Amino acid sequence: MNILIANDDGVFAPGIQALAQALRPLGRVVVVAPESERSGFSSALTLDRPLRPVQIVPDMWAVNGTPADCVYLSMNGLFDFEFDLVVSGINSGANLGDDVLYSGTVGAAFEGRLMKQPAIAVSLAGPNVRAYESPEHYAAAAQWVHGFIAKGLPVLPARHILNINIPDVPALQGEKITYQGRRSQSKPITSHVDPRGRQVYWIGLSGEAVAEPKKGATAIESDFFAVANGFVSITPIQMDATNYGILNNLHAQFSKKA
Image (cartoon, rainbow, N blue to C red; front, side, top):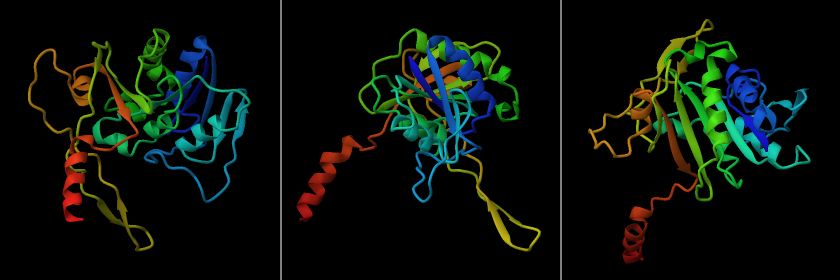
């Protein structure tokens, strides 16, 4: 396989280095990632300036753009061959519930949504992962991804990807197919005055997971539940955000007004 790896933490981030090392036995691995951290950029593309891909070493490129830029360039002319799989990560921190709206890790994976195999967004979920500076901290998660791909990826409908969160625990409890959970409202912004007397603001932290009622042993749980209990969370998510459950009713309401 030709495997494209991107991320939103930057080309030198330990998570992407560990992932590239783990996946090389599966085929040719090409890393194309932002030259510096681009967290929170979702699926943004750079349209107001040119992009400059710079080859650092063979099969490793840095781009002065967003995570989605990196995958878009790679799949639309940067290389003279095609990729079989896009893997984004390993992100330093979870991408659970509403996080997928903002995540550059997920945004990069969505750029691979038109491939024959489902693209994968991978995050390491734990309270201290952003302090990790060595790929060794991500090695176990990277090996899990290797095994997951080697066994054969599940078949998904078109324009779907897999959002995977791996808990940072000594021993994983297994895997769970999950649905996307929900967060409560984000924490308030924090206001400060900078040394030049100007008012500045920090975006607040993410809200907590919304509490869920207990469900049966065979019920599908949320991504939050799986990670909190030591399971890898595997959530299929899609580009089409249409709510088909209310589409016909809403159409009927507007038809009556016409």
